[in-house]
Length: 175
Image 1: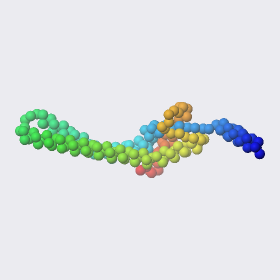
Image 2: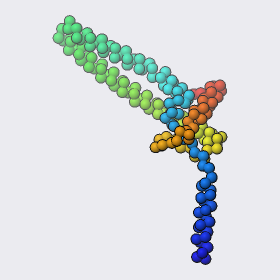
Image 3: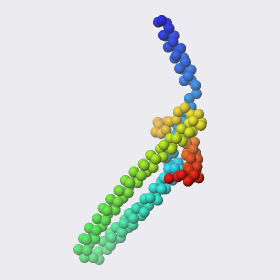
Image 4: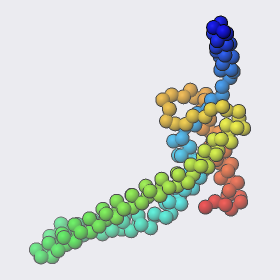
């Protein structure tokens, strides 16, 4: 019995080594590149730009008003009381503009995160489709310390996402 276990374990080790020696197909996806170039992401950015453009234009207009008020203040052709009032109005308006800018930045950041999370499932599904269709056993995504460029299948994922986007456009199912 004592000879049986070492023989069995040696046999199992040889079997495992032989199984591991089979070709393992590994791919790598650069998620930053996917998130920068996928048509769904680009469409989401455009949608956000349209949504936030009016607020941004309002802020830019108010900034121009502050600059005009500051120019008027430097001209020196007003009474001391008028200059003090204008200076106070400028500071108040500048605070208001800065607050609006910060609110806009926060909301835009939140909405971008929302859009990426909404697309996360679709991106993962595209990775699974490519893995299955091209016979990959393992797909890694960034961040990784190093991936040989020959393992990079990002272009395949982007192609799959483009196909899905075009199909959604044809079907009219884009949100």
